[in-house]
Length: 134
Image (cartoon, rainbow, N blue to C red; front, side):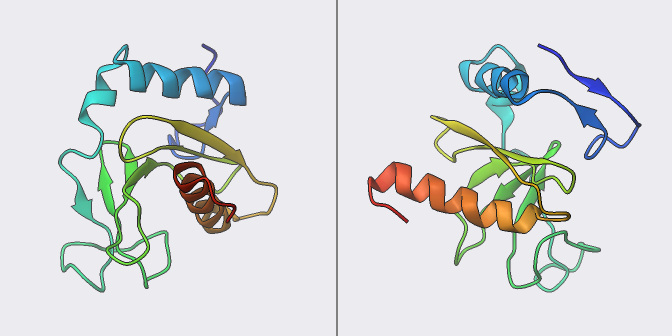
């Protein structure tokens, strides 16, 4: 599995191929990597509008997610589906569904298109689960 860092910024400095990142996600799901069993644990609120301890949020203030051990938990009570993800500003959006059954890696080409990727990922997950085109 190839993964290297171009800079110390963990959230934006990683360099990998989609195939290698997919291998990493599969290792989270199959238990090879321990962090897969603790997805979502010790999660803290990220929206200053809904919790006093939060300083800022990378998503629109209209949503309330949580942050856990190096990943986001998309658990907004209105639009969230509980996916574990890492929306990236610089390239792609990897996620694991809330049931820890499947994963996806969505590439985007729009600068700062992370939230559009999140919205697309939600539609993909919903379509996959329901069998209905979104």
